[in-house]
Image (cartoon, rainbow, N blue to C red; front, top):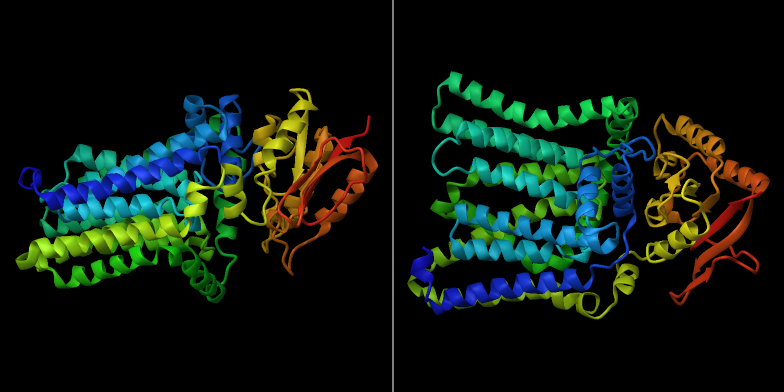
Length: 534
């Protein structure tokens, strides 16, 4: 097929469009490599930093995510350095690898034109600020092994060989280790393998053997990881946070409220991508009407269900969760393009011209819509533009101040959900509660968690307390237990004195008083730094 189109001017146009789309995304990501870390990236970077020091996950940093993402960050920083630039270089490489997988999967399902359109669409959509695509979130690291496993299972017309099934299961297990919702891609893979076996009428013994191979491959990385955590002595903490608390967290949002959140977030995240979504909907229609596309109905339907389930897990619908559905959305777009070309084959050149213009316009719209952010703003300004109401731009300077005014063995305690401060400072946390969201939620562990955080800080006697009263660092609700705030006030007043503050002014500028020789100004958009009394 490649030989057939090699000298075709229309194919040259398609490849040019593909090169422009990928080149633009690469240019944007490189230009914004130094964008400051947001809090999730800060968590992963801090946990990865600890792993590079030989400290296992869940010892000095508690969170409900499986430790695969921490290991990924440790590897990234070992290769590219412990700085935002190094982390975002690794994200760029992961993104390009995922684009390649989307291209290859689409090529198996459609044709070369559909594959080009699907891969270009994913590259553009996965960089969208509305989906927080410039940040190295776990979703990117779930999709890479999951799509690799999917490609292995798409083994032409034959049932995949045992080695492919084993490797596919193992990759799905890696996806789960990156984040728990990865299990829905694992379920998708198992269901698709079962469908293939039923369609090919494989005898039950062989089917059972394949199922056992798949399950063993999937379980192996998870089992080995938790065995390693047990050897490291942190298994009880890991189990509590990744299983018990994660289960409580995932059942906080009632269905009705979750649907309201979904409606609001879907409009905010996918609205800026509406041309790509519109072409994707045409692909859904093509799946029903086109004979060739219908052969892939089971595969695409199962992938859609798995992707949607990953997005909906917990009913929280965070912006970056939408990255989970971008591959299947891109595949639908590729199906729409390929089907249109085949349906109107009689007017092939005219159809291709119209399709190229339509796809180019759909790809260009998100870039033009946020052109100032992509092509004009500095990384720091882009951070402020994307994460309004947060203090991510200010965190590197806060971390530098703490690093300069502490010894290597000193500990610090951030009273708020700003783990990026630990990473920038290079200092260990006095408490494992690097997030305080769990202390404000509606579940049965709140009182125990608050008391444990208080006890850990009192025992460690950190050199500095960094108090962050920012709403987005707590998400205080009507049901929240506010006891921790009273404890902070009493403990700090007895043992610490104000040493500085950082405040975002109404005009967007930042007032840094580090160290401070004037009155400390408190406020909802400020960080107050307390130093321990000598």
